[in-house]
Image (cartoon, one colour):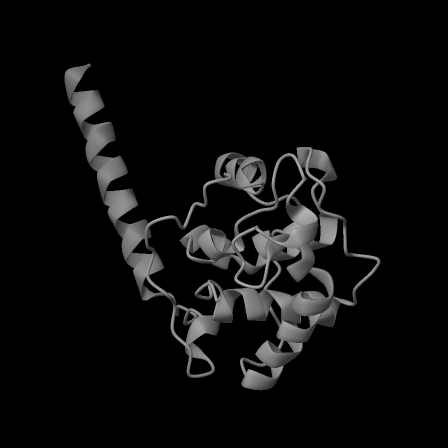
Length: 182
């Protein structure tokens, strides 16, 4: 009986080793260049107060994504727009028109319209620095569906903005936030 178990372990080890070797030989698609590297920008280092003194309205969604992933149909989305300064600049316009009132000009969740919201608007400056937030699918899900499911005041933008506008805003958030307070 003991030899049978040892033989089974040996066979499983050989099979697993072969599978790992086969996976290693498969062509790997290169990871896309992060948005913050596309346009001569660089990420700001995380510093004191990045979480903000008011907390972050994005934490429930972040928790769901970390525990169970981004829901379908958003799971496989990635930004199809070219990684150019034109895309980021268009995103800045979308952000200024639709996001800055709550999330603030620096992305810290301290915009005038968001001051009375409970929970407060998400701190995009903090979120933009999280490796998970670089998931295009997470960002698109967040903007498209809004925060109703998480008890936040963020409106859903899937019917208010075009897909291109949402992707442009994501490019801007990933490339230019956080900004230093003025």
